[in-house]
Amino acid sequence: DAGVIQSPRHEVTEMGQEVTLRCKPISGHDYLFWYRQTMMRGLELLIYFNNNVPIDDSGMPEDRFSAKMPNASFSTLKIQPSEPRDSAVYFCASSLNGRELFFGEGSRLTVL
Amino acid sequence: AQSVTQPDIHITVSEGASLELRCNYSYGATPYLFWYVQSPGQGLQLLLKYFSGDTLVQGIKGFEAEFKRSQSSFNLRKPSVHWSDAAEYFCAVGGNTGGFKTIFGAGTRLFVKA
Image (tube, rainbow over all chains, first blue to last red; front, side):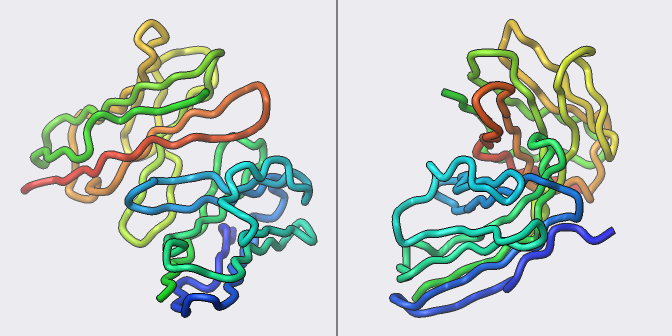
């Protein structure tokens, strides 16, 4: 079975550019989570969806970040404009019950 | 508010030796508890979980963890470590009320020496 698929795996961009990260959850999972991992702050929950509806976005750092889930098999996390402090590994995870998380391999973002 | 503390940033053990990684949590009600493992450049993989019932839970790769409510702890153990166990280990707590936020500890990096 395919796991959670994230793209791109690596992204290098310049400050001010728009960045879009993509996620395909495991088929049948109706929860989707976006996390950010940095050395300084560890793993932070940014937002999660249930049945494609955003439930809690209190972890989204600021208005430059937005996330969408247009259907059950696709989600995006967008940063516009990007800043160097956004450099991190962004993980998508899906879940059948909202508890046990299945993670993708992450998207490593570097903003110069 | 939920929180997770992993007191050890890194631990080194010899191959074949036993392992215990510590985890303390703060949560107002009965928590859901998890251990995840992350190899370099990879996502996190669930090792084991505790929801209710028997306080000693078994996971994959020979790991186990024990929930101790009185100590607010959920320590991870393995009787004999293999070199392939070298990775970062994360303890996590999730609530059963007010949503599905899972909060992760800072992680403990395990080094295994031959």
